[in-house]
Image (tube, rainbow, N blue to C red):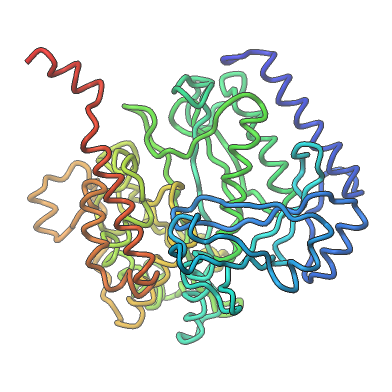
Length: 477
């Protein structure tokens, strides 16, 4: 029955019942909760009054991808919409220096969603906020603004939007202080082996309640490892949804006495947690990645885009895989890609093209298999898009797909075929990013410099730390 048996299952189901009752009572809907569809400040203000919302949470993101929040009362909300809420940007990682620290957060009405459980005694509404300077201009260091600026470039190429579908994996552990798993289940296993099934269901409910459709969820390969796949959406909306998803996974676990983590490689000898990311470019309803006459059903646009991403994979790795631990997942085997090439069915390649299904032209896409969910999704999606558009602009050539198992090829064989590898560790990734003009153009000089400094300090911290394994192996020398 898992680590807590029937007591644990009962606690999770009791919490789930409370969520159902809470959303039904305060949203006045029957059955499964309906997400809000508010578009204007007046819509939000009316909802707050009608449903007696007592707390409004404004969310934004620092450059490392950490959610930041502050609370606004209903009385303050009209002023927040009109003038924004000021805060000290020098206290947010990667934001302004102390002498130019005033920032303003403007709530975005279209992102408003009811949180499907109480926070303390409060009924809460959350909105994402746009960060601006005191003069009202967008702040260049706000990750959400960075992605929005990159997406604006799509119009120059005749495209309207980029769809993104992430598959963010995570682990449940008994406490935040250790790696005691909840179960020994494996891929697609069912209860009672999968003790996290009820937690996943509770999270699924909360996601749907907050306007985040789920395609499917399941137990992953490693013990106590899970995946909830979100239905694809436009890139900016998906970045918001992914931030909400990560918060809900961790918060619902915490409320039920366990710890959820997106750490890429918490268990030695087991598969790590990645975030396979599906991308496609559209012009209205037309999928610009699809070509009916191509052997792989890929258009020239798709091929140039994929080539651009492969060409810049080493430079974007500090963004898509930003932690020291990320590179313990990116090793041969364990279903993690390392080698910079593409394929259709070959999951050892960095980019995979899901097999085409007749009548499903809209689903033609590329799947980036190397990112992990510790990344800042706004910066990661911006870096992916910038690399792809560079490939489209330069009409970059896409090499032939790799059909062999890359893990079992020798280094000499890969060299003969011109197959490079991702950075070996965070230090190499930082070196690649530091000198990248492409990355500086996509994210901004200041953001890249701050990330380089931060990540080099993280690497040095690990390099200078003497681990228990080192002591065990070398103390007697």
